[in-house]
Image 1 (spheres, rainbow, N blue to C red):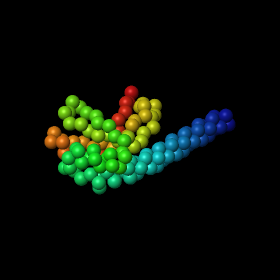
Image 2: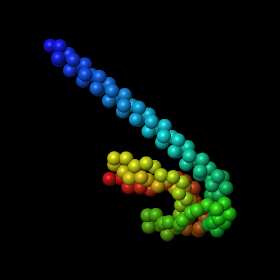
Image 3: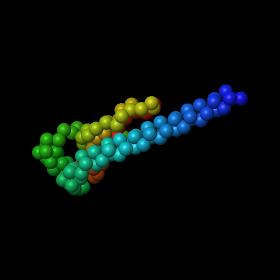
Image 4: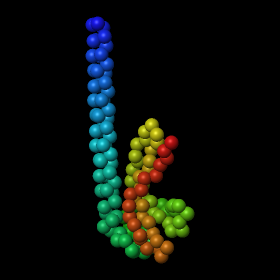
Length: 126
């Protein structure tokens, strides 16, 4: 009878330890994700204030070049308009996905006017 009680106590202790470990990991993950997001928003803020929506692509290019910002032009989803991307970080991978690259995306419309400035994450999940 004593062996059964000891086994039940060990099982309960192991379960409590597992819950504590998972809770700690979850809290740590949320804190580090919040820190990364704050970093991304700090990186995009000067661009949002310095590049108002509606300005010409040439003005955007001039602004980026004068501030020595490394960027490249890409196209998404079969669209005809280019998007300028500025890499600002990486999201860590996990069991179901690889690392994701984090960019500031400067999207233009068909008239070559700045349409939107936002954060874009690009990666692969299994």
